[in-house]
Length: 67
Image (cartoon, rainbow, N blue to C red; front, side):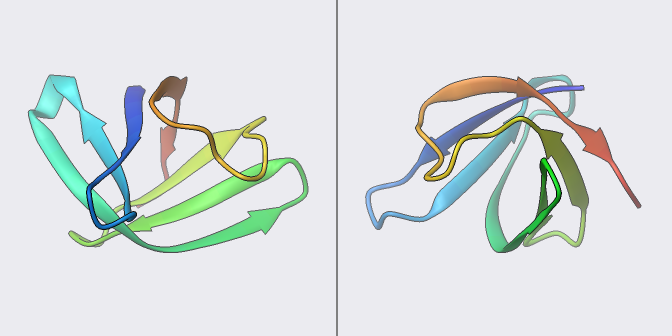
């Protein structure tokens, strides 16, 4: 699914999923090989391949929901 990554005024990373009209804060992230795993405040885990470190925002990326 396509998601948009952005940073809020407090400097926190946010994920917006347009098809769900959902915007959640990233509460944890970890690197696994070439993939970032992001845990959102609603409990979702997303896997995103090919993100550069540090993450530049705003950007739209393809993500896969893990749970």
